[in-house]
Length: 210
Image (tube, rainbow, N blue to C red; front, top):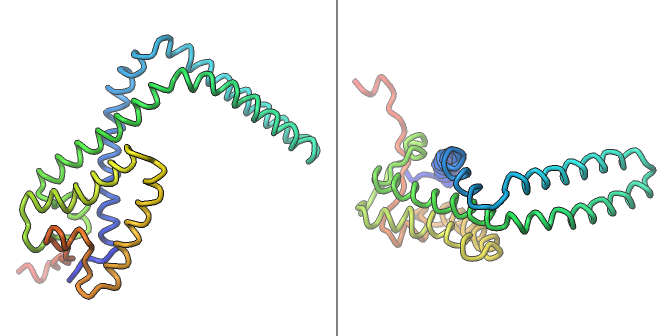
């Protein structure tokens, strides 16, 4: 029986959550200290930025006690002045933020490649969702199906242009949904190109194992 869209989506979500958690822990323990050391006077800049944010929040809280018209005027002024102050520190930390995003995207890509290739496509998410790969299952086709036409494609879009990514990625998922629901063989474009299909293999009951 073909695996449905929800089951496939949940398996991918489990895999991504696991990978993101590992990359996050790697960033906290290794990446963040290295990137912070590359920014001159990072601690001072970050402390000043946090102070600006705290002052803004305090002023906004105070403004909420005013009448509606006066409150709206004060909030507008507070946000404008705060944005000017924050922009200075954000520009100083631009390289840090940019490198942090690159760390996550590259780390997620590398870890996904390792997991998909090492486990031959039977990732933790697919195991939990009882999904098996059927068809011409080999390393090359698994790379095409799970990496080039899925994870790496999505991450590459995000790295190339975030605006296009927000447009193309939802369309990509919606197309998958319609193909799985409406097509006769319930397969996606990447299933057909890689000649791999995803089947749902129900867990055998204890009675059936004997």
